[in-house]
Image 1 (tube, rainbow, N blue to C red):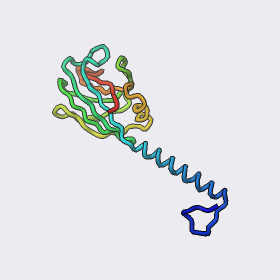
Image 2: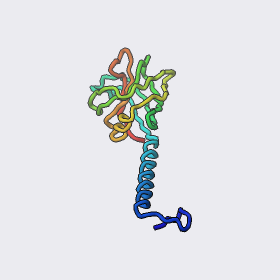
Image 3: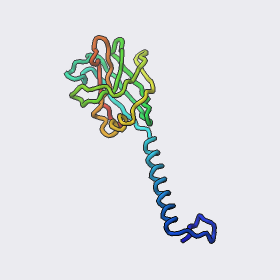
Image 4: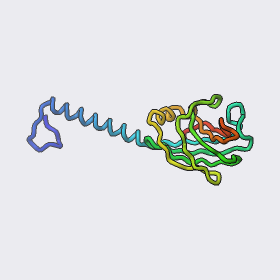
Length: 157
């Protein structure tokens, strides 16, 4: 049996050709997997104080959250208003009716109604969020509202 990419007259056994073909297929599958893993995923959320569980957020707090996950890095922009002295912002695991644990610390530096940064995200967390973003939310914390002044469920953009 001969292959077109080999010099004319070069012969290979069926076993060698099979190994070559299997190797090529495995390489192609791995390349596709790497390409898919490297594809950025975009998320967004509309935040408000009324979305905090039980409506216990700031009555005038509102904002938007936009994020892109690329591998194990999450880059975001958070724009807010009606929030005095924000202290922290996170992504939590939880539906719209439940509070949950922090899965990503956004480590924001708040300035003039905006925070933007790139932070690490564990690949397992990135994968879980991509499978069901609505089971995760972003919120902002202040001293007056330590459980959150505003929040919003993530959605894929």
